[in-house]
Length: 201
Image (cartoon, rainbow, N blue to C red; front, side):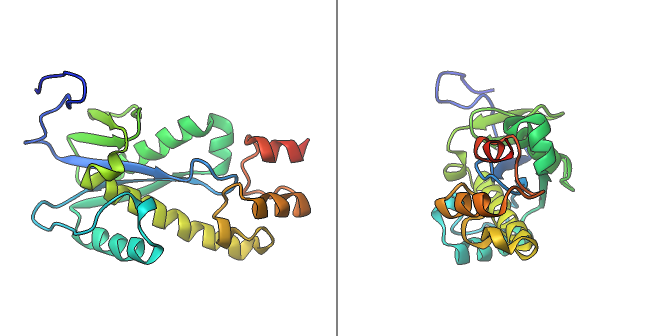
């Protein structure tokens, strides 16, 4: 166990099977929140891993394929719009993260979570603020969660083209809000989010 002074990890990582965990889609008004968990293979390093938001869409797609090919284990999970409305977005995000970790084919001994809080799980976990730019396994999880959510939103766009989800991926842009006012609230919108709730009323 390491010194627990501020800024130092509570864990000694040397003998741990580490999974990185991150989410995508907390802010949007539509679609699920996604989470991914990844256990990287130290013998098959992947170049260029970083926070998915700092990568181009093409680079994210390329890295996502490499991660799926080279990682020891990976899993992508989600919480639906209904679950988000029932639980609230924080609890739904934590649940999606837990589902991703529990879905891994290899059981990790430690989960490193992007952000400042951890889901309740059977294994030890540690939250790392801005972890998606500091820890390769979290970067990998960030990329898988983001690319998976973008794919889901493109599928939802095919069902609900009137909302232009292909352009904003469900985020509360001016275009999305305009289309919401024009066409009303759909089954894929998060009813507990203020801009959507206002239209229902």
